Image (cartoon, rainbow over all chains, first blue to last red; front, top):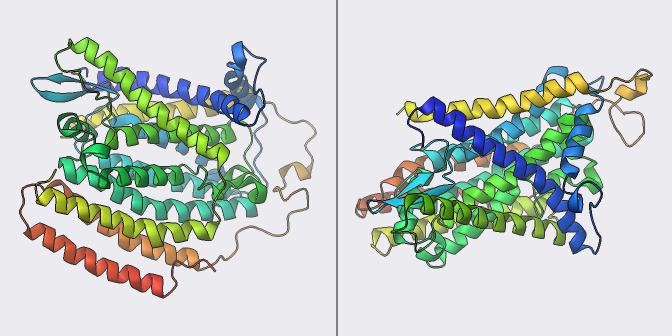
Length: 344
Length: 120
């Protein structure tokens, strides 16, 4: 952390932004290679080694494409909607410490844009806002596929936000902290949430992971963009870089959601055996550990995406309201009882 | 307290600037069709001519989902201050919250019984 907050936002924020954008671009290439491997194909091969330069060619192509606005669309809303999704999902990363170190027996966050007291709330609030650009795009397009997709996306987004909030409450109750750094510091001291709260911690992690998939519209929860019935979902009418921004936001969303889940449940950058090392070594190791855990979750998301089916719209809502919401309440209640009894 | 939000503000501005920069790059570099026909600006409906506007009335089930969502979201807002202060606060807040959650669960059971979450 740089003492001057403006400079810190600019330098660390710029670095976080650069890393996330690079990884987001590489993710689109990696997914093509990975899905090809799963299906016995080769994937991209032409640009650069293993076709790794493909995303940059894609970006160049998208920027050059003609920018069409349908005659019947709501022009203003249609135009500004693609500005928001990438901004919002990148914004989620503002409160995540990507590294950390022990000093005076306390775990400190490092490589983070801001140590906000209410970081967990900030993350939940921003990811709740994600339904707005989708609805703006779907409504403004004046296209039936887009509108249907937007309605499904909003219904799914708001529904799965409830179990997500309930799952996020488990580490908050255990640590008594609302900042992501505070939650990670508690885990560094007492053990990661998945292991420290037997069963309950693991179930809360699974619930958070599932709801993150739903918020990012990934299989099995990608009915809002089911291409077999809704063409392109809310981006049906978008061309060029505008559809590109929506697609990029989904890669970034899964990436950032993996980082959030790592921080809340898997101890963030903490690994055993760091105490006593020089601070620079701790920061380097914890940075590597944070990205290792995050990318492991990220890989699992795409593994599921390419090997599973999607739920029907009604099954999706039924799963959320009938099982996940009461399940989440049960997890919150058991954590509260365990904390009050002094078990954790 | 406000100062800790300054980096967030700077960072969010950077993120927004990135999206705007892509818009600007696209506006400067994108091609413009010379021979666009009226059909170029039609809405996409699988190649058919669009049949009326998409802005129609839609099913009330979405409205019911929104109602249930509001109830549970407000509850979640109440849970956060409670969750942060639970450790070492004794049994009273725990009992209070169980009563609160119990009332909410009755509402949930009512919604399920009435078929509010059924998607028929």
